[in-house]
Length: 303
Ligand SMILES: [Ca+2]
Image (cartoon, rainbow, N blue to C red; front, side, top):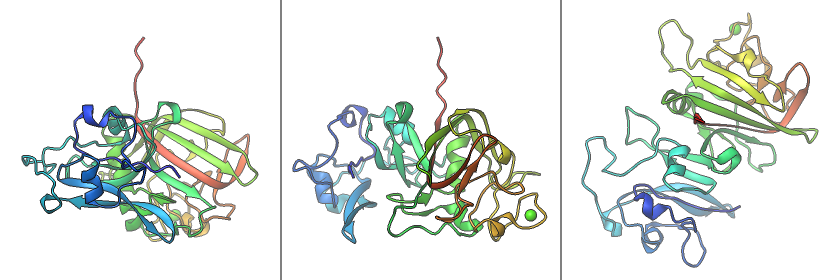
């Protein structure tokens, strides 16, 4: 696994260095001392790597004055004057061109709150923030049978399989028009993508609307438009039924949270090895081994 890391708050000129931010000996930073040795001296949160069960995993640490870092003038918004990014597209615009784990600050009302995310800076020009990743080859898989609150907050390990959380998805897709890129691997070895030029998840509480209502549209791709069936639905979990089925869709289809209707055509949160982990359309039925969803602000091309 290629490991890169990125720190916040540096001027674009500094971070536009495309050689990566690994230490001079090629190792990944493990502590604030390593961060400082690499020339980054500003107080703030940094992504470092540590070995857990013989694998390197990204995590966030806070480096302050006691580590020899410098405190910038505080700003009222809680960012300490740092130039923070709200999503992976803004990180890319600041010169972070590497795929991997990073830090974003997606909440306009809580600008000091950071989220550890996975960025794809390669696919279709990059700038993608990964919001869900499933892969049945991981040794210690994340359980996606979770409560409504867990789906709201997010869970899993951004190094492996995870759900970023409905609060973050709402914040990401509410800031501007966003597009969605879905990739799947079927158990039969087929792969493909679905691209939606419009994807939005509403807030938890909106008058007369179900929680975290999802809208998507303007599909193109190779695996068919299975998500349109779920268009306009709120989010349901085992402990909160917002579907339009008489029974309980989440309970009937493996326990994952989803924008169930009655019940599912696409379901990317069902247990591994289950036929409910699927992407169905008129033309093709895929039972899945891997899936990923990622979003980025739509870039309108003017000719
Ligand atoms: Ca129901």
